Image (cartoon, rainbow, N blue to C red; front, side, top):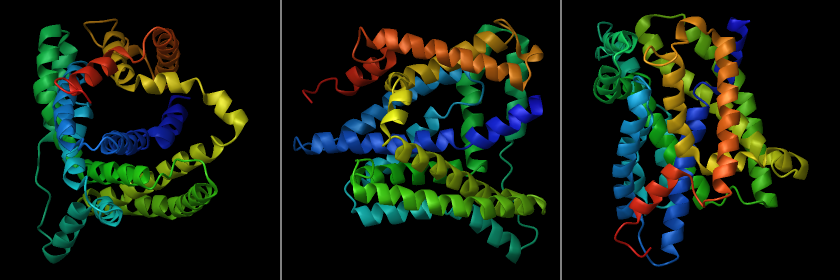
Length: 342
């Protein structure tokens, strides 16, 4: 059962939830840019300050999530949105595609064909993960926090380098920005046709990309690390757009939109929920808390995750019935506009 649960959850969410999160980050940047543009202002410089604040939230999240935080990666890669904010739609899309092609991986792959002795730089990620794990197992809360916000963050960023996440994240940011500019989430006939085509193309591409990735992963190490990484990214990206386009199309249906309407409360507090998940997870699984990690398989962990999600959703509904924003969203918003009349 554990293996079946792992395979199902990994297939549905691994590399896809992160990709959707990245698309929405770029789309949110468009909303902020567009809102300020209508007032005759350039949001770009304020966005840089917003990224500085995000680094603070990344540190808070990383403190409880050993070598797994993604917000610092978003802070670093988010600079690309500032740089292209005034580019044309075509230029933004072209750069997004170039990033999503994973150019670094293909450079190393071609280099290995030219020189069989070529290999990727050893960033010692495995060794660093082992160090973080040892500190986590020690049960010392102070050491746990300090290690996570220092070595843990370094490990997370270097893992992202190895996994091709820097370029993919930049590409997804730009793609979300481009989708916003093209108003692709508006409900009209042209957009419905766009999402139907996106669903069809993504579904058709997923199977061969997945099969090719499985074949490549049986090859030599350098091939797995380069071409394998690229194809793995592509098959996950194809499935991501199957999920996104399916949801967008289903949401046009009144019954489906009513059924999932409660999720908007969770989404409006996404930063608060993201970080509190790390805090709750640390308290549930690690030695300074309940230390359930040695006793929980994938099935029980999934049930715990569902329970936490439901509790968070209930809290979001209660909180938003009394406040306009979640607690961390309020802080991020308030500090973003400090010293400005907006």
